[in-house]
Length: 501
Image (cartoon, rainbow, N blue to C red; front, top):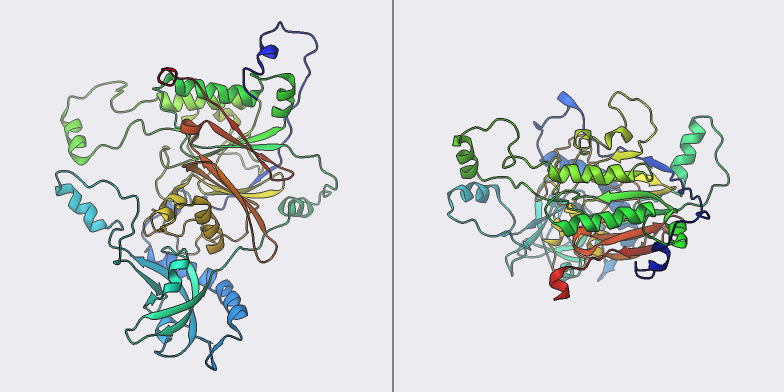
């Protein structure tokens, strides 16, 4: 419904028959899977290679179980495929299968030595959209014993990236390459039942498990607000979004529908890169310049964070908000990105949990990590700001973002290419990027366009995939019906002068 269709309701005198609406309550139970240690417990002294070994140890049993079921009776010319424990145990001419970590050897991938050489370039080369090169890329399978080069036309039909754990079956040829004839992935993990975790928590607390629950409402999802504080049309578009969520710019029927929106989730890039990081030469020139006392707008522009705080402050009295950071937000670059600091939100931080508060109750304004997972209205939700999918895009020929999202779930890895080409904290005891429970909804922010799909697993799992576009470019807000997981889109458009010309 457009504003013009609502004009007869908006342009009239206020009456006494205005209904009193109450917003649908949201059942919210977040997980703290991706929170890093605090203070001195967080350090970067450990090796990144440990992440691959831990990841392989976590996922290898699941892959082996699936491969054994698939290839238990597989034979070629009377020879039965046998399992080998390590990649170095593969023997030439023997039909076998082995589990390992994929490594993509691609000359166009970023290299730390190239980054050092950039300091001496007059003009650095532009960033590459893809790492793919014709005929120069190769696929390796490695474990703690060594590395094996994979070959065969079968590989062209599989989406593989560095870091994913797979089982491959074939034989080693005379060139020392492993000719692959089939492969298996970990596939979707176990999917919890709806309300499973919430009811378990009630039972452990000795409280009565709720039998009949109130019908759930809708979950609003948006991404890429990219507030920069420069464009007037940007402020107008945000104001339209706020008025819609508050029910201030719609008819009585539309207000009743909006009252069913129980929570807003913002999936990354809420702020634009208003102040890019200067180069080494620019930074040296800034240090030599005369010092200025007080506020210096050339060094720091507070306008974007102030506008975001005002936007959230207008919403929070009415609707709870979950905020994920993104690539352009003032958070740590390495995944998992930690929650945006409450000091950025002087108006909204009264709705957050105090650092000294020990209660397990979630805050009305929950600034969370990226990636993030939690239970909303009983469903398990998993979401990111978009960096893992954007990085997978560089490895593969396909441009289909939903296929990449599906592959990420079937690999059971939130960030498969970390830490190779995606910065990550060097975990040592366990990789939290391994997906232990299959979500019911998987959303990814800052994608080129809105897309959605429902995928299924071998154990009757069903997952709703949602690719969220940038709101600043598309004006799209996605509504997820919390009872049926159906999708509804609301688009906000403004008329610009160049469009009218």
